[in-house]
Image 1 (tube, rainbow over the protein chains, first blue to last red):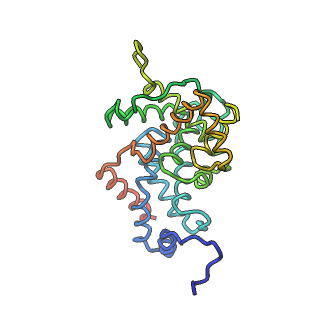
Image 2: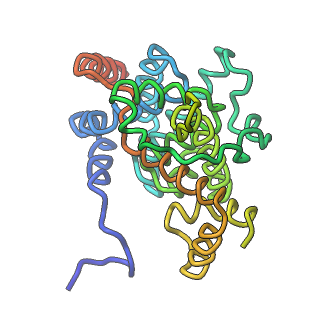
Image 3: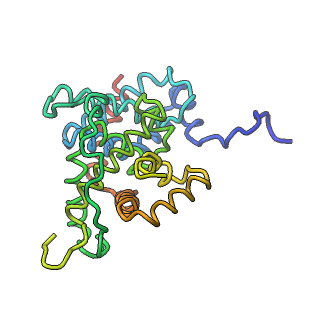
Length: 208
Length: 77
């Protein structure tokens, strides 16, 4: 006979026990959570702010906030999603302060359809992985994603790089699922368009 | 299904969240329409090329520094 479980309850995530211990003041449990997610939080902050120093500060601040607010964490979402949400908010706040970008809210920059309508219709041949070595490829991918407006960059980072589900991404960004889907598609299409400049099929007599 | 319909379903198609019926419509449209076929293929490649790639390496030194700074900040409270 299984323990009391509501029908269809998923397996309990191992973080739940760690969070409960951390709430009771077990700093070793909190440190374990830090260890698990410090790199992810740093990467997310770096993707959004594009600045290593800012990303380091944000990572520290996000964990401090999580530590202080741990008592308020209800466990309705995953701890990692809750943490990423804190990190995203801190990152966007930092962008606003820096004002190096014209558009720093999750909304302002997504009003336009610009760049989301496909214009390049050439296959990528040969396979891009054969055209560039790992380090060149890394440079191209970084440069390309940096060119996206922050609202699109953030959705793409969470969903397609950090592999959060659509629902988790929605929760981390405070958006509805349809809004995440629509932004994600436009982000993917914009990246495709930009990458096509590097990867498009080389036609005879034309240097790509 | 026309090109505009395809574009609006593209995200769900790529994430494997379309019904079999709509998937079939996507396939039959892309069999006829070269532009949509290219857009679908290259958008799929875009996702694959970024998937799980660590674009920003976190060196062990950076990780130690970050970790110690986080713990120092939190435990000071």
